[in-house]
Image 1 (cartoon, one colour):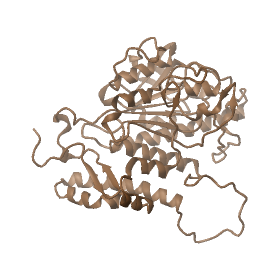
Image 2: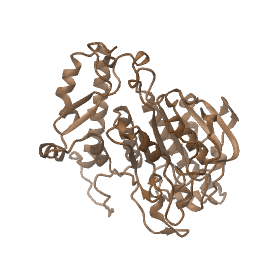
Image 3: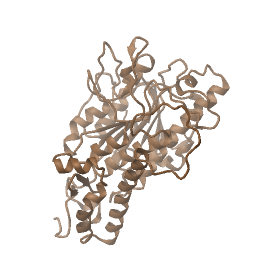
Image 4: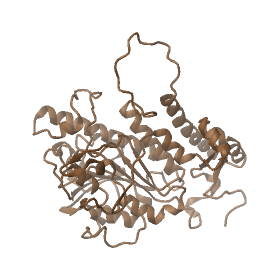
Length: 435
């Protein structure tokens, strides 16, 4: 029975031009004893990294719980009990375009057609419970042209809502933020949104009313939550409308002007998108997310990393040369360190019966094993989180070599409550070893 002082789990802070869902608070009741429907939901986040990895620097030693992280995976050392490294999975298709398209569908793009991706299949099943069925974020603008006879545009995304419909990722942090948290239903709301008034300020009166009935612990959690939302806003404002500088360089280099609102710094951009993804789950704005860390045919330059002089795609065709392999490994480790950052953020957020990470499935990987030769066997895959108790992390899950990637898709879909016994007709069974 709900006590008189409790508030519903689906409580929102509201203000003119903004609606902000709340994280779990004690005033919502004891999750462990809560009625059906009040237990934190299970979320799915799929993170794509382009261009593969150098196998010798990725492959772990040992199996089960007795495994050692490889050099690329070292940034996950503090999260070893929260992840499962999965080996033995094979992709399909040829080249960057087809293999990127198959990362979440398990089938190759043929005559412009693909299959429904894992994230969209799940969103179509559970998306009606949240304001947004899913959110798709990225960091690199779409590309055009052809590669191996396929339009490079097909590698702009890994999300397909049907065999012919791609879902493009949003790469502008402010646009993504507004889509997640702002209401544009009325003229006054639009006017306030255009002025970019803080979402936190818009809902502050409602937050003050809630604080009066909240415990000290809830008050602290509410303050920390609102501060995390405001922190993202402040960072966005500094990027889009930077403060006056106290010094102006005497010369101006000839730089190509980037798209409006897109951070120039690679790490800043990616981490902003990760923070937005965490907020989207924390607020239950959506339960399904996809993050393209870069385009599937990415040629991004990583010279900001020590010892790296080449673009990512170029170094992935390393031909076994030591210098190229070293740079390739450095970039792969950088990507994994960003993944570790996101997992730690999720692990810091309590949800009554555990953490946001405990109640999530966070799939990370690339659509090819090694960019040199476009190898598609034994993909680099990590699955983090406990999926609300459905997964058992902290292991190296060594599947039978040659296991189809859709077997993992099927196991994840079933863990998310989707009642299917085959994934796009390409699976041979569910990879229940991750459970």
